[in-house]
Image (cartoon, rainbow, N blue to C red; front, top):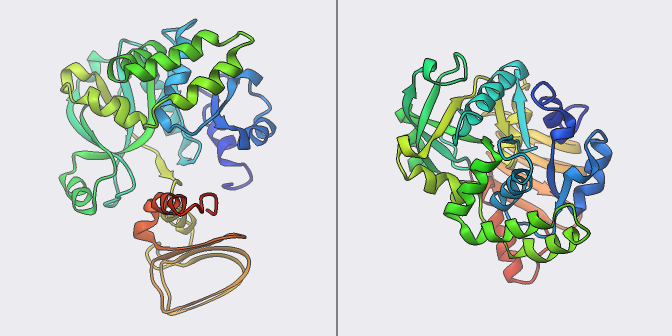
Length: 345
């Protein structure tokens, strides 16, 4: 929740000027299905699809492409994660409209790149190549760059190099491409995945669809769209890859980590973001402590002499880490699973 509306409600709201609600699809899981239907009653019912197993972003994005390719192969698909905070919606809309026009004009892939403000190790990076002359592309006056390569979540040293170069932007995770372009990219770079998704798409609209989805989807490779498509395609070189980056002119934050949530929570604080504490609890006191995020509803929290920590308290578990390492909490889930404690976090 960010303000009065949930983040998925805000995601749909900022798309209202570029897409009709009838054209929106949501890929989710069964745990969230009922809540999403309640929060987004304007969505077409069969446009909410539940993954029978979590398989990362490549199968989810590509499934939409294979479904739409059957009847609207030239339609442009936009991928919009629902954990993003976007301010200056008019700037966002302008960029998306330009990206749609660019993606619709051929076999082009379009990504929105966010100018980096720090050496962030939890985001992917895009190395921008040559700038394309505006008069050669159907996207108005927005600057467009060819993409040289993608780097997913670099170490701190690399992230610092990227920041210093001035030639890298954060990968926002917002992509635009036609259904045919994405489906064909999956066929080229992940043929086994393409075969499975085609089987699911062929069953769509029949009484067998739910069973085929349940049986086939868990066999899909667990892989991100970055590794499955963007990195191998960019390896072809700037000209042949046909991947284009539009620099984001709007404020953007990905709340995919506790550190990102901390920074977002600090954005309106009177103290500077590097010093403020963010403590979500009933009662709290802080002594000689800075830069710490605590989520402990219903608890009394006391901080004494600590810096830059993340502490998350739930009914059955406690997470303690540093803000710098908060992107790595997935390692904990794997470690707990190895000890047969999966499900504690």
